[in-house]
Image 1 (cartoon, rainbow, N blue to C red):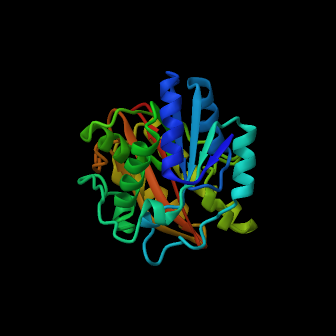
Image 2: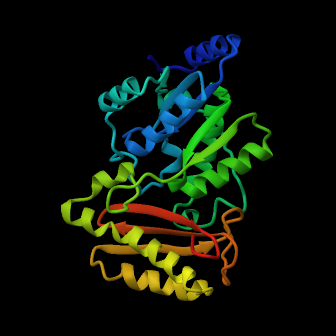
Length: 284
């Protein structure tokens, strides 16, 4: 595995790989790798002849009061995971190279960036779209892999790729969960032992929505009310949102039919956790 720290070297390596007609798979990450990331790496390893992982804690997607400085960073552990998974290139650019002092260009995906998490994290998805577009330009992957947990991010990236004619295929893999259903996340490290137990309420509430649809409930207002009632039983929980939306437009759905996305963001202690579930009209 080759560890690369600057854009020029990464581009030279990409040029060589493409000259050999190899398919490049790419997983952009912010590090603190876990089994969810590993599922993406393993899939890329099966699909592609060359696999690139980037680790970059992107400052432009964090608000001034968010956890940029405290975000988990463990390069040594991440490097071992990538080596064991047989990653070909580990790209770790410096902030000053990605965003030089005079940097002033950003990507916005209007109509999608201000919904769900965007309501509470102003500017976050402008930062996401910008860094992902930059990484796509540098790595030039044939296929890029993302997890369903960050569903809004995936919808935004898909729209950006379509609108800007970026020649990359986006593959979305299922959420990887702990035994109690908690979606794997780098921010789970913020939870103490008691909070970790309480955090399983997120998945339980999604299961409740699934059961309600299966039993014939079609009112999103009623489903959301029951989810909130369940979550509020946890003393350390603070709800940012519980929403039921169209999985493509992210527009709110009042009368549930066909396929819907149940999405939520909940604070457990100091950890802001997100989760979601796609459910069709039969509750499956």
